[in-house]
Amino acid sequence: MRALSRTVMLTLSLSIVVLISVGCSKEANQVNAISSGYAASSAASSAPALVALPSFTALVKHEGPAVVNISTTQKISIEAFPFPGFPGVDPDDPFFEFFRRFAPEDQLQREYQTQSLGSGFIISQDGYIMSNAHVVANADEVVVRLTDKREFKAKVVGIDQRSDIALLKISASGLPVVRIGDSSRLEVGEWVVAIGSPFGFTNSVSQGIVSAKERSLPGGDIVPFIQTDVPINPGNSGGPLFNLSGEVVGINSQIYSRSGGYMGLSFAIPIDMAMKIKDDLLKHGSVKRGWLGIRIQDVSAEHAKSFALDKASGVLVALVEQDGPAERAGLHIGDIILKFNGKEVAGAGELVRLVSDAAPGTKVKLQLWREGAAKELVVVLGDAAPASVAQRPSAKVKEQEQLGMTLRELTRDERRMLNTEAAIVVDAVSGIAAKSGVQPGDLIVAINSKRVSGTKQLAEALDRAGKRASVLVQRRGNMMFIPLQF
Image (cartoon, rainbow, N blue to C red):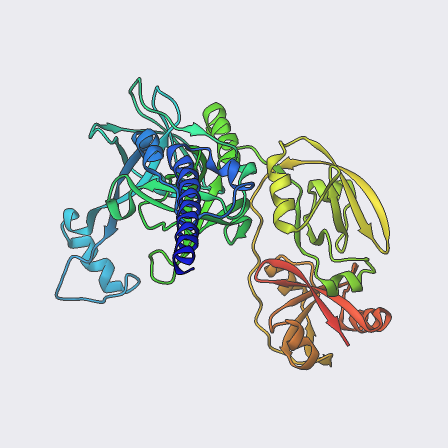
């Protein structure tokens, strides 16, 4: 009996060993399948989660030679005080001009050279290279170094500051080139790889995943950034972001940092957008963008209630620029833009990108929400132009208090000086207004979609609004609606 038991146990043990071996072989085969090729990302959605990480060695060997190091030199001249014995003399001081007049000329100007490093990648065998605008902007000399140690002086074909894209050219042929991918097909959670020159360490490789898509950042209002957790540091700027198929899906551009180094948040420009801008730079040397002539903000739940909208969607028009495309088409302050050429507008960043992507002169159809009803307008886009910025006023006189706001009316001279259509300035806030986000110095332009020309009209408009209203304010040149509930 004991012999029989031992035989059974031995048989079970052998079976378990066989099962474990088979399981390990299957897992090993799956890991090898990822390590041996680039296209694992397409199969990842159907395959089970794996413990082992993919290997990036093949990708780096094939694509690394097309990634370049970029160094720039810029000469800066500053005015130096010629007499060390008189430090700290203000240039406006009469003595400064006296010493300046009698000092030798070569002591008045001092010239310095500044150097910076960045990255780029070759997109054509005859020497076209893409990078970031901030890497090469204002440079007196741009030098490109390849992985085989060859160096070339580069010509800046064109830069676009707004998207942070630069196109360079070196005199060479038969160069290794990257393969361009499709950033619209990127998925959150997908593996990505960066190659660049952080802190000057050329052809450094780092990896991570896509953390989010279509991020809007301050100063990057037209770029739907790809957010990753790939370690990116100074010097990586302008370098490529690859998917596991070895295709460029983005250009590493920015990091979020309080220390100057990597802190877990990196942002890349989608390659689809970058290639369109590259085409414009190659053809025209600059980028042509559509212009609507409005300032906008996202619609919150409180805004939606104030404007009798079913849900918080679209974007709210906070300013219509005088004699701009929007004004000529009949767009009003307080309009909510729901669709742009039939495409639903999710937020302010998306509308800005849609307008910027369209060429000047393009006719677009806008679906609006105005005073509780839907409306359509056709607008002919203009050519993008910078917006003017008004100065912030100084509050002096207290005149009226309502909803926690101490208000006064601007004089005609103040309005002319500030170049504003607003009639009322907020001197102080408390209570409901303070909790809602109104700040001292705000200029009140309208209640909901109705302009107000004085404090009396403002009080009447608030009375008509009932328990909810959205106050349009101008703050340091920006226009925004602030919802109030009272």
